[in-house]
Length: 176
Image (cartoon, rainbow, N blue to C red; front, side, top):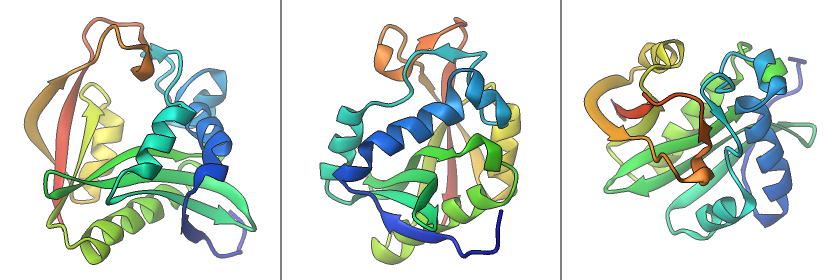
């Protein structure tokens, strides 16, 4: 990464096309293989669409964060108030920038929003439970496995087209 500072801001509707491109590039297809967060071996299809992003933008106590440098979108994440705790999702870093510390900064900014702006006591997320390297990343940042598992939404193409029949989510949590 160059020496220009990273700026964080809240997304708006004008950012939707770039957000779809960023999230898709980080998780799906051959481009995603340049980074370590790829789900290309697990899922095909869309990771996110403009309609879902707009719904997140319109929801109360919901913010899509963008990390940028010199006006260029480098990373994003969605944070919202869900059942009295922060929920962290739609986390993506450009594949060619993964491993450079940008994800840690984005996660810290999302935690700051949940704790300082909304006074929430914890942050939660769901991760596909066979993604050991990704879970380890979050554990190094203070998250713990709760043992709560949720089924993968097979048959709902909005979440991707599974290449395996053993996918499920696990809830991770961190006190803020």
